[in-house]
Image (cartoon, rainbow, N blue to C red; front, side, top):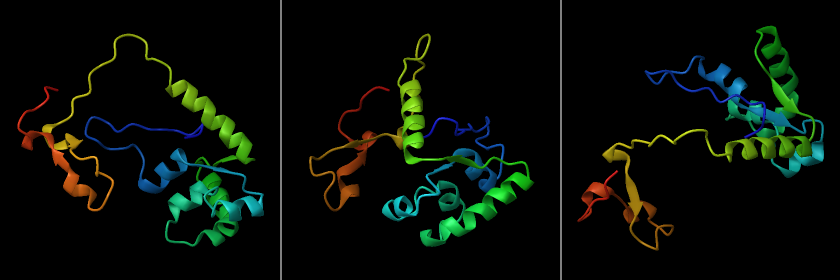
Length: 147
């Protein structure tokens, strides 16, 4: 999460305003694109835009396609977000984390979670194989917690 990146919410029907590719441009930001050693070190993940638009392309090609993606985005009036350095991205990340960590004004609203989506971990071995066997729906337990 980087300050300046958009986080659109779906409408009442659960639909987003834009199609998948446009959504990726709004919700991702590159960083440190000019630094080859850094790109190698992080496996190309500094090219977040290209990584999200072209997940099946090997990361070694992100540097080459990045200018094409940026030019195309600008031709269509779409955002292409990028921070110059990794440090700039870290600072932007810290800003948004600080903002998200603030208490909301007023009374917090309860989150309603449907029973079919309520799970709890029933074993201290939850992160061993197989994980799913230690996660069970709450309604299958002997007692339930009121939500």
